[in-house]
Amino acid sequence: MTKERRKLRSSAWFGGAGKNAFMHRSWMKNQGIPDDLFDGKPVIGICNTFSELTPCNAHLRGLAEHVKRGVYEAGGLPLEFPVMSLGESNLRPTAMLFRNLASMDVEESIRGNPMDGVILLVGCDKTTPALMMGAASCDLPTIVVSGGPMLNGDFRGQKIGSGTHVWKFYEDVKAGRMPLEDFLSAEQGQSRSAGSCMTMGTASTMASMVEALGIGMPENAAIPAVDARRGVLAQLAGRRIVELVNQDVRMSQILTKQAFENAIRVNGAIGGSTNAVIHLIAVAQRLGVDLSLDDWDRLGRDIPTIVDLMPSGRFLMEDFYYAGGLKAVMRAISTTGALHLDAMTVSGKTIGQLVEGVTNYNEEVIRPLNNPLTAQGGIAVLRGNLAPNGAVIKPSAATPKLMQHRGPAVVFENIEHYHARVDDPALDITAESVMVLKNCGPRGYPGMAEVGNMPLPAKLLKQGVSDMVRISDARMSGTAFGTVVLHTAPEAAVGGPLALVKDGDWIELDVAGRRLELEVGREQLEARRKDWSPPQHAMESGYQQLYVDHVLQADRGCDFDFLVGQRGAAIPRQSH
Image (cartoon, rainbow, N blue to C red; front, top):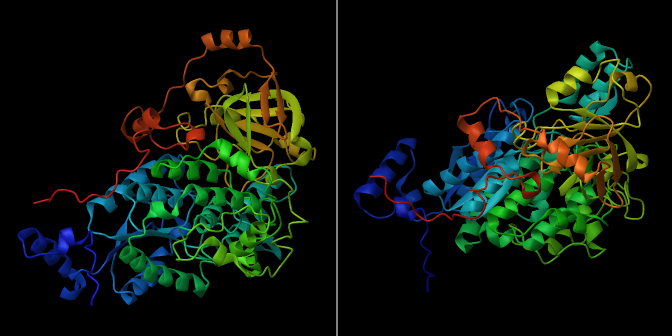
């Protein structure tokens, strides 16, 4: 007896013999689509962030073709559609400003169109969370396919990493250790192939989070963009999404609290980007999963960082893939009981089934648990009178001796003030000072730009100073490094305590104790508050005004207050 086929969402557009069904099918047929593909076959939307203005995603048009093959092979109809592409390297004032906008684009495109399941093609930093947030609010069967990292950077026989060596070489130029012509010559050596940053920056971190969460196919994290196996993964994802539609396995069934807890622990093991904190909280909130800064600190605190990748370590993503990739990392930490092995993935297998018997092929790249890069990795969440709602620091990228530090503040009121002041020879600053940058948070920039890893003053670099404590309400690139306290909440622009810091105030950082304290009395701070006024924004209309009016603070994921939660994918009214 033949099992009755489940009625698909797309049949509300393409099924039947009425006027509207005629219209929907007829116009689609101008692309040469035959009749039988509208006969109850799953329609798979391929949400593509391809753009030549987003270098990390410029190869995704080709990857989409591999997805389409898989969809056709499994009996589905693939239909590709574009959404706003967010390129961290070109988009100003910051790609983060537009993450929520892109998520709205994705959500409304999915809800308003005839699709039964979705493949999200992502790459550069903010494209991954933006597409996941939008898709999560619709909750159709979904698979995320990352574009993969570039090949290892190479400059005169030296491995160089995306972003990481930009910051390093630039400071070498400022210190007089590197000629400007050498700095410029390194540009092409850093970016040798298609793909996203090959360091453990935010792009690679989020690709790893996709795999750890189970919303991507096995090995999604690390296959290089130009490796043929990336195309194979995309084709298999195309086949699998049709099966997920037929089984009605929705995004919310994969992205459970257990999945997020796994991802937080994996982030600690790989030395992942601080940006993952904001993005995973935002995705979780769309699904109604309770995830907070406290979860990040609690779950990541005792996880050792065992992946020796830049910016924390020595190697790059290509090396990571050859060593065994994320499955080898998950296998290692699973032996400590740190993972929920019964968490389901879009592959149809549990995390435990995927990591069983996996081999680590290079213990220099993926280090043994008894020889970690950092004994306590993860993301440390700091609290105190300077950050009542929390701030974060990445221990694996910091200088150990600065993890407990007390020093006088040198304050920059905004990024322009920083640029005007930092290299002034008369600036009263020493290696013991604490650099403080204000008004670079979600509302202050707006968009919370990656400026928190402030380059050090030239005069200190020339003295051999390589790191200092830096505190801001900004973010930093996942490719960056240093003892950098970020995401200070509430931010300065809304009157958070950071707004009240003055030159010479003493600040204490105690990472082990999870404390960040401004040594100024309450009465004095209240007196300063009376003289404080919020900054003016350059664009007081349009999208930027919408952003400033509705963005949540960093500890709540920087989503818009009106976007939190699911709105589903109920079939909208007819258009004619």
